[in-house]
Image 1 (cartoon, rainbow, N blue to C red):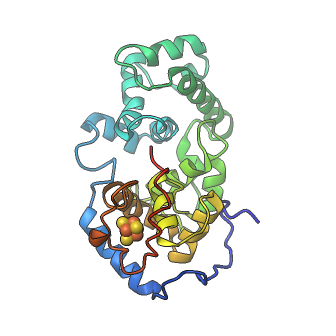
Image 2 (tube, protein in one colour):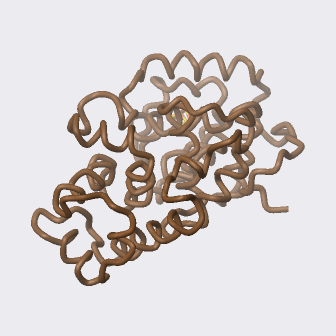
Length: 272
Ligand code: SF4
C-alpha cells in the first residue's frame, strides 16, 4: 500500500535503526527546538509578507488557496503575496471574472514587471482552473473544502484535485490550516510530514528511513509522531535548512544528534 495517502495505518517501530532510542526523548528534543524557532518559519507571522498581502490570504480563503497553488518554484513570500498583487492588478478578485479570463490575458497580467511568479503561464492556467473548480464544486468559497468537520484525509484529497497542488502541497495546506488559521481538524494523524528537500535529507541521514521516496519519508513521520506527523514539518525544515545542510552539517548543534545515525554520505545531493 502506498503510504502517501492519508488512511490511518499501522505504524511499525524503526526496527532497523542503529541507535536504540526512546521516541519520547526524541520528541521532547524536537518540541524544545520547536519553541526556539518560534515563528521564523511561519509565513503568516513576522515580516515576510506585507501586512495587506498577509491579511488578504488569511482572511479570504480563495486567496489562501491561490497562495498555496502559487507556492512553488519561488520564495514563499512571493507566492503568498501573489493573490493580493493580482487583485491590485485586476482591480477585483472575482472568481467568475477570473474563470472567464483569456489565459493569455491572465498570463500577461501575472507577467507584468515585476512579475508575480517565475512561471506566469502555468500559474495563470492553475488559477483559472482553480476558479472554475471553486465555482462548480465549492459554491465559490474555498472554505467549503474544509467545512463541516471534513477530515484531514478528505481535505488533502480535495486539495489534490486542484491543478498545481501536489500531495506535498496538499499536506502543507492542511498543516497551515490547522497551525496558522486555527481550523479544527480532528484527525491530525492524517496530516503528514512534508516531502521537502530538507526533511528528506534529515530522514535519510538520521536513519528514519532508508530510501528517499515520498512513501518512506511519510512513513518515517508517522513513526516519529503518529498523532500529528505534520507537526514535525517546521522543526525538520528549520534543522535541514540551518543545521543539517547538504555539506558540512552542524551535528553538534542539532537536536537530533543523540538519535541520529549520522549517515553523512547520504543527502548531499538533495538540495534546492
Ligand atoms: S545530527 Fe547531523 S546528520 Fe543527523 S540530522 Fe542532525 S545535522 Fe543531520
